[in-house]
Amino acid sequence: MKVEIWSDVMCPFCYIGKNNFEQALNKLPFKDQIEVEWKSFQLDPSLDPSKTQNTIEYFKEKKGFPDAQAQQMIGQVAQMGKGAGIDFNFEKALITNTFAAHKLLHLAKKHNKSNEMEEALFIAHFIDGKNVGDSETLISIADSLGIDKEETEKILTSNEFNDDVNKDITDARAHGVTGVPFFILNGKYAVSGAQPAELFENALQQTYNETVSPLKDLSNGENACDADGCSI
Image (cartoon, rainbow, N blue to C red; front, side, top):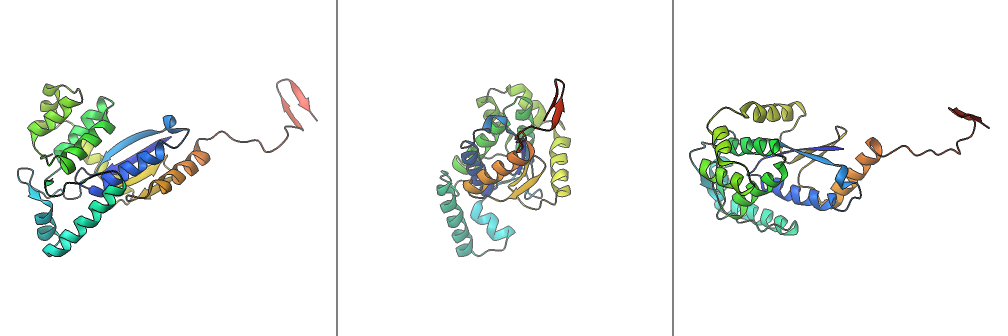
């Protein structure tokens, strides 16, 4: 059973959604049968990768929010984060273009470490206040996961994985995705937003029952034929 998740590194609801999803996943007896594939999505591709802003500045400039409203919104998200086991550090978080970080995610996928990379990037951005648009920072993060520094530097200074990132974004539009996180469960159901763990658990169970779980024979097996003959 496959779960595709569209996410952006600088989206706090994506981090909350990830934790809630994983909490639900760990309760399910078939968790080892679920393949998770992280997909790229950019909330603001217009951002200059050579510049950073703090979260308050970004909301005031991009969204037109007054200082008090921006502070209130951040406080509410921080409270949601605590409920998911995350201590957001919005005062240190640096808003920047995340395209390079998404390239790193595709490199990690090649090494079967995409989930670890997603978590590492969230921690770097939301907890440690690191610039996830900076090449040296990204190389260091990849190195911490055992990915070769030279390979990371090569993909960050070339067009490698550019098409993969753009394809994810195009696929998202084709599915009607306008915000993240966005989950597609085995190509059958969708879950949008940082939903509670209970909702994810129920959605995963329902999807598994309908698309993966073996058929249950409600009859007694009579009046049928097989290779050994017929029974009445």
